[in-house]
Structure formats: structure tokens, C-alpha cells
Length: 252
Image (tube, rainbow, N blue to C red; front, side, top):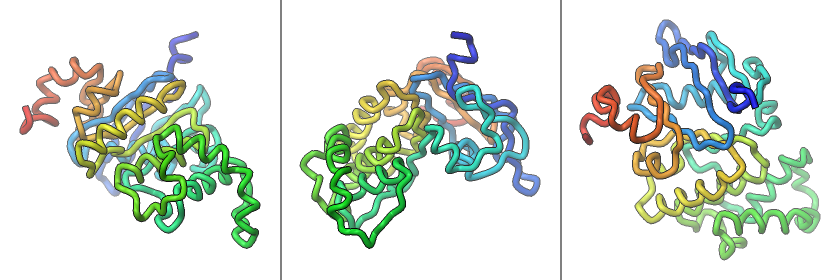
């Protein structure tokens, strides 16, 4: 496989300006296939803006984005999703007044491209139950199939969100702060879940918890003021004095 073939996602000169303010500044990102890759940096470094550019919620001012060698710079968000790039949002994006299984079935309907025929009897969706239950089992929610999501813990809601993401059969998952706001037990649960679902997939994640990053991620890209400061494995990045100053200064 060629060097470019080793990378599932690449950006060249990716730039986003807002009325004179440069939020993302000439970012050249290379994400290896089947890697767990983290974007880290202080608040305002441009991490979420990069995610918004990659998933086409924002249009780049300049630059190019390629996925599996295909130029997706001008693609629409739905087209990106159909290609297999699925984003899990910073705030848990599940339906609180539905059961865990019903949430996964909605995601499975989206993957099938079927309309949401809410006027049809619920029994018409039962053909999706087996796959929904498989996905719930994969994320450790076997006992919560019929649980109302509003009654579930925050960590379990995030696990459910990952199950709904997996229902879309992503080739690449973008996880935006997957452990934000969690206690230690839920952080450990979601960390192990990410490790499990990463098998055979590529994951790009924004994450503030450096313990999670050091445990999970093969490659770490550090952003500062919208530009790449440095990149490497956790040991390389954490020992870089520029990173300690910009990102870990108070914790170091």
C-alpha cells in the first residue's frame, strides 16, 4: 500500500476564517487507517472547528479534505455520512423519552434509508430488533434494552450514543469529547468501550482527559491557536516543552 493509502483522512492547508479571525490555520492532518488519533489543545485551539470542517458543518475558507483518496471538500454532511464518516457529538444526542432499543432502531432506519413512518405500528420495526440488541450487547447495555433513556446514567447514555453511531456502520468515527463531564467509573467504561469498537475502524477524537488520551491513542495532534503545534505518540507529545507550556502548563 502506498504511503497515501495508509491514510484514510487527510487535510491540506485546511483554513477557516471568521471575519478576520483565523480559527483553523493551515492544518495538514494525516489520520492513519485503523488508528485511534486524538486532537488535543487548550480551549479555543480550534479542535471542534476542525471537526466541523471535516464533517462539513462548516465550509473551509481554503484547503482540501480527502477521505479514502476522494476529495470531499465540497461534499454535503449527509454525503459524508453515507461514505462512512460518522460523528458522535459532545452533548449526548439520544432521544430521552424512548427506550435504548428504540434509539438504536431509529439509527438503523437511517442506515437503511427508510423513512420514519411513525404512523405505522411499532411491530413493523421489530425486524430491526435483533441487530439493535446486538449493538446494545456490544456496548454493554444488554440489561437496558427496554430502559427509558432519561433514567439512564450519563455514562450509559454515551454508550448508547456509540451504539447508535455503530448502527450507521461507520468506517471512521469522530468522537467529540466522549468522556466530558463523567466521573471516574464512567470514564473507564467509555474508554474500554472506545477501545473495543475501534477494532477494524478508524477513530479521530477530541478529548481533554489526558489519561484517556495516553491510554487509547496511537497518534496525538496538538493544536494551538488553530495551527498544529506538534504531533506524535503520547510520550513524544507530553515531553515537548511547547506542549507543556501551551496545554499542560498548569498541570505539569
